[in-house]
Image (cartoon, rainbow, N blue to C red):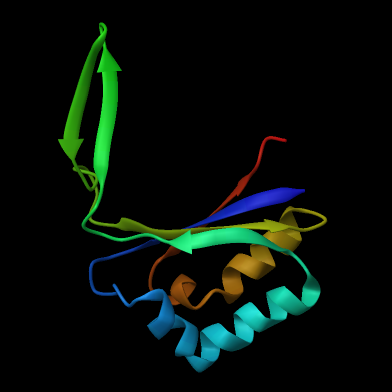
Length: 110
């Protein structure tokens, strides 16, 4: 089953994908996922380019983000394919950002 891992964190960690890829802990974690063949894609998201779009009563409303009601930001996402939720949780718990942020695990509707 596929799961999306959504990585939430505060504004104190906006390292680039290249910088994060050089962290030894992240490299070990990611290399393990690749070796297990469970990665299905993902991306690091830029903090400054968030635009919210809503349509209400036929009118398109556009506003700058990020999210007004939270101090955490979506920093990235990843899709993995594993056998069950417990395995997805194990992968999420190994993500280096889980130590100071949140890694949300959500099944993908296929």
